[in-house]
Amino acid sequence: MRSITAVHRLGIFICAAIAVLAALAAGVGGGEVRATQALHNPTVTPAAVYAGIATRVRVCIRAAYDPALVASSVNLLRVRADGGKSVVSRMYDDGTHGDILANDGTFTALLDLEEPSPTVLGFQVSAGYRGQARRVLSEVFSLEVRAVPNLEETWNRFVTCLVNRDLDGAMEYIRLNRREEYRNIFERIGSEKLSMMFSTARDFRRREIGLFRAAYTFTAVNRGVEAQGEVIFIQDIKWDDVWRIDFIGF
Image (tube, rainbow, N blue to C red; front, side, top):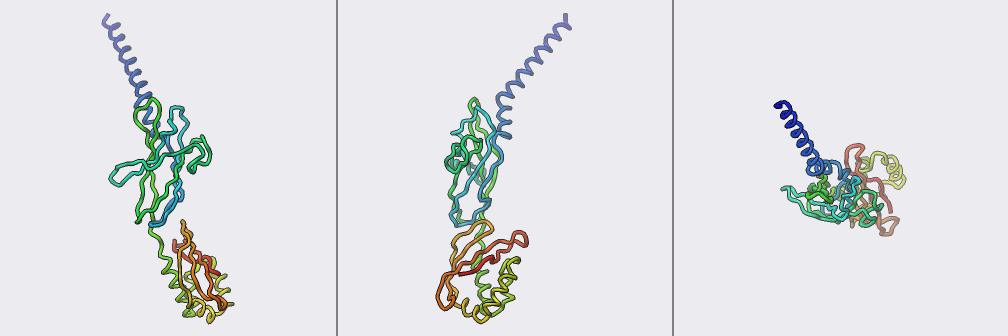
């Protein structure tokens, strides 16, 4: 009789344990699965921005298919250094607000950023699911805000070399794969004419800057007439990460 009672109690215990595990899987456990798998592959384009320069940033994240997902609840959060969080934008999967294809599981938000100084911005995505009280969070991801490269100093040194008829020195500021081309061009023009031309160079102004590429304009006398020129800088990431001139012309 005692053995039957013991077996009966053991059976009740096993059933209760199974019930608890099932409840965890449907409730808290289900939330944990969603938290690690539901929101994934965050991307930020461009991958970095420059301090003090207004830039539109596109943020995307993939959401695994789940009929319980409330599409209108997907939000982009800003994660502060102290751990605090705030909603900065709703994210969309309806073909608007930068979203490319509606209902494909990729949620998108567009942000207009202009951070005053170099830093690293932290972001996270949250989403609500029907039948689940707690919101699901993605992993934290980041966007680097870089200092604007001092290309005016590079330009001034390049111009000084040309004015001083130092062609070898000027070549140090030209990209490695363009040096032979520009050496030939400058030699055809002649060091005397180059010196006179670039001694009048002024009004060096940024037109645009992006990752690894920047375009500036300047004014100088070309063929006896004051004209606007353009110079394009490229960051030589394959060589030494130094910004050098890739193009210069009128």
